Length: 383
Image 1 (cartoon, helix red, strand yellow):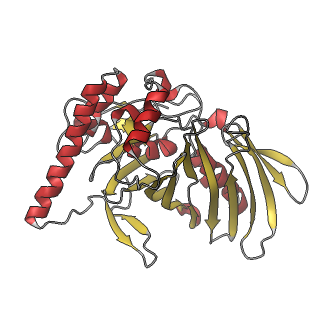
Image 2 (cartoon, helix red, strand yellow):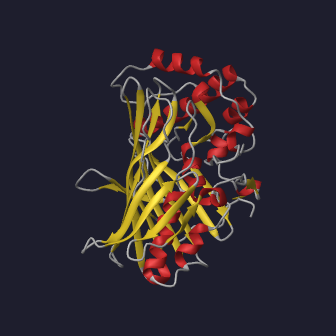
């Protein structure tokens, strides 16, 4: 076990949603105080991959939890619909809608904890069991494996952030690959994530932007989605949550559907041939008023669980005890440094417990689950 047992019990907080979510339990400090601290601590062009934020910038949860929430925290089971489509096109359209649903609101000034090496997050929602592990610390690489044996669905994700500070903004490129496998139909869907921009000047804000592709080689179908920053004048006005795209045949490039809307509201699907429109995705039905995970089996929770590793820091932030939060966060990070030093002295190389990890010829990280399925978790999401 690489992460030593945290103090106290796990602390779970509401997921990010269109409703109040985390804002119901946590209020960030003064925005100008945050901006001042950021400019004081970093310089333009700095590589932020290893930068340690003060708790004043942290939301009370780990990045592993944020990745997991985008899959297991929904008010509508849109993932199950993916495997129940009558044909390949119907299933592909459902997968595109589900892909959009994994985009969640981000609040400027908040950032999740950078997971420590070996940290895990294990949660179940109904028959969907989700397990994440931090498989590398430098660079920070997170792996996810999720299975629903009843619906014959499997998810395998490998994510690593590449953030850069550009003076007026921070761009966090989310590298890696996402796979959704519909085992009953032998279909494998590959997709990526949009980039996350934290704009500091002239108006602070956080937006998702960039191109996302969804590809299924078995059916020959492909989708291109574009998340827009939105046009504005000196940072004021404009819509930063627009999304446009298309679904087409990969070989012929023949467009079947056009996609248009807002990922935080509604997204419309237009049949190019007939001109008919239908609702592809409704954020209010899917990511509004999400349930907070709860502990079902306290004894079954690993010492490596995110909600345990960061449990004390989470409590400090929720209670506004910023100096104590700084101390407790430093303690977590110091434990990680001590473990790394101990391994180095013994000449040991850390090996992930739940995934095999490698890099391809292009230097891209790849993560493969060691087990065929994920067992039920001691933490669950109420249905």
